[in-house]
Image (tube, rainbow, N blue to C red; front, side, top):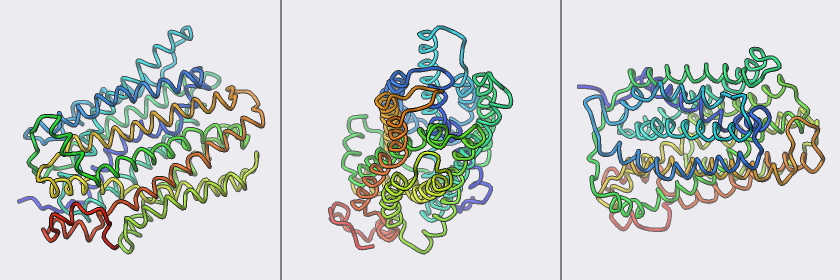
Length: 456
């Protein structure tokens, strides 16, 4: 009989899947906006509309993919087979996304739409099964939290590779032709993502078999809407992603124009943020063994808001040292919540089953993915709109008005969204103790529907 406990190899294998996914997420968070405006040649307003359109597509594909994973099972598992099927197309989509054809502007705009939407579809095809996988690897919430710690550590390694390797390799390979350099460097990242998905497929095992509610979509949606804790996580996911993506998207602009960085310093600035996030994964795992994970979630995001105010006030154009220090601190504190959030999703699905008597898993995870992507789309649209409003022009010296706008987009604006995110978590009540009582059947029906959070 197979053990219910995850082995270290399985945790590494599980983490490799998120590393593959985050090669795309990190490129979209950290360099795609900069690539589209300064290298590919899109107007910021057109770029913002593209990001918004892609999220409208997600409104259909994410719930659809969740339903597919709910309805189809195989001897290889319910979720893992998608990694085997879509690993190669996923890698190819990354290469095409960073390919810049020498065409007219309108033709390039069509190419940008086609390749970005292709990446979006491939991303959905593997991400929905992946974020659902943790619910069937192990029934132990502590083991899930540990596995998510591995997962998010490897995700930050992917971001580290994108930030430290891609800009330098693009410059080395392309020279004056940065478009070719980014095509080659991100093509290599896409190939790595393919290998990582295959590794995830062959090293993980789906142990837990849940009975999935096979009711029609409308009824499943109705059941899901009764899950108040899942709804809170949706709002948290949307607001947090808004803040995270706005800050990450403008980081390259901030380094290049506000700090006056060359390619080496630009890479270093992005890498500092990713390094801080990696350390946050380790720190979060250590802290949550000794301190309530929900409290950590709440107060870390409120602290990000305070640090963002300090950065906007304290750092002037060209102030390299304080900028690096405060960007490190913000990036560290903001990611302390990440392992908690992704384990909380699986626990909210269990909560919904205990509350309603019906389990809606695929649609729940698909819904979370949709709100994450909706946040990415809204953030991308805001970045394009704000760059246009602040009169940004690529590859020229920026005005004081533009530099102030870039500073706002790195600090105060995302800090506001993280403050809102932390405030929303005061309504979330599934602590470790609450979850253990719920699974043991110690909570009465009224306790599952009460609006007042349990004491921590």
